[in-house]
Image (cartoon, rainbow over all chains, first blue to last red):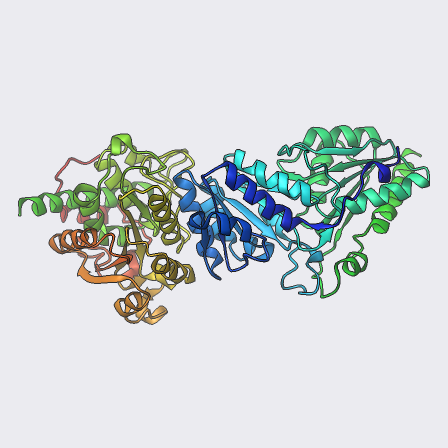
Length: 325
Length: 281
């Protein structure tokens, strides 16, 4: 079965709405779940939770540092705070608060970061954070999750309540294809193999998983056998899945809406450099800020779209062949 | 008052502990620790409702204390151990490899009495807001105490939390400012003047009192006042005027001993000014 027939877009949806739906559901399941927001309740799709559980919703105002600290204090007493704001503010702006009061103190805080990456779009580079994965994965004790679509974001939002410890959950603003089955369980740290192949492995995360599916479809037509793995949990990395697939295909492409520096690709490359040096290509942004534009335009402009992933696959296969000679 | 005399005696021992710990470690922050010794002694040995033997990090059912100004760790560790959280013997390990008594408080190695890491300034007031919210959600009447520094109050996060606590009517939150007027680079008034702290906190919607933080009577009385007004819809701020380095003449009233360890001779001199009341560790 062709990969593009296996994964059907059931309709474009934004991952932040998946977060909102997941938050409401986990709020109904678990009375310890609380939600905090820094004046972005609508953008984060937290209104439904706030309306149904007003006593468990804390409006913090435009004061993110205090929101992170307050979340840490709530977590001490057994609450499970979901603190929501834009990814830029949830990381860079409050890095020291996350570092000391959350990661080092191992408080059970769920940092919920929307509008991550370049597909935030028209707001421009001030809001398009592409450094957040790096910032957060550097912190010991922190789990870093970047789901790919609405259904997976919803499932991840629900599942992180079952993990006792700090989590960084990254999602986005634009409507993107929703293809993960609605009943798929989310398993933290367990990569999902979307397609088996032999010529190359694409490790993709977040919105670029769909771009990678489209790329794999294009490559299939050209007779290239692609193994496609969704790295929804960047930390802890599913090292077994990475190593087995790299050993099988001998060529790696990574795809993410992030800078190369600090990103998932760099993480995988560093791991493979010591375990199994493998020709690698990064589909990511190289040391520049973004700009205003429509999400699809920006993916093309910054070479993050399916065609760029397909090109990277061809480049890495050429590298692999050169090495075999 | 016999009770006040007893607390003063404990504070003297706590000050000895601070000097000896910092001297043994060869580093640490004696100035602010000495200045706030009366405040924490009053809290831990008289006013706070806590049970060291049954302490739990979740703080349920007891008053909670947060040290936002984490560099006052020698003082914090001394009152914790002297009030029964862990053996005083362990004070010898302060700042040593593998110790639970990290340079700044940490929870990583499970030191009883420490709810959260602190040291990077400005964060503890926010954490105490969260703890107070959680207690209210649980229907608890117990209190949340937090100690911040005046220099620390230059951090923007303090004022975020000031707004938040008043907005959310966290009236079982009792904050204390160690108002010693000193910070690392010099007097607060010359570094980044805080102006009229009483007017500031009052205008932010807090119940406020200015007291002499080195008078045990005043400290105890202020804490009792704050407790008596819990539940009135407003968070409390006790602005406690202290002398940095209090109790040791050559350390007193200057920022020079903010983060410097006394040598052997200076330590002997300091200890000669502080009565040993509970036995040195």
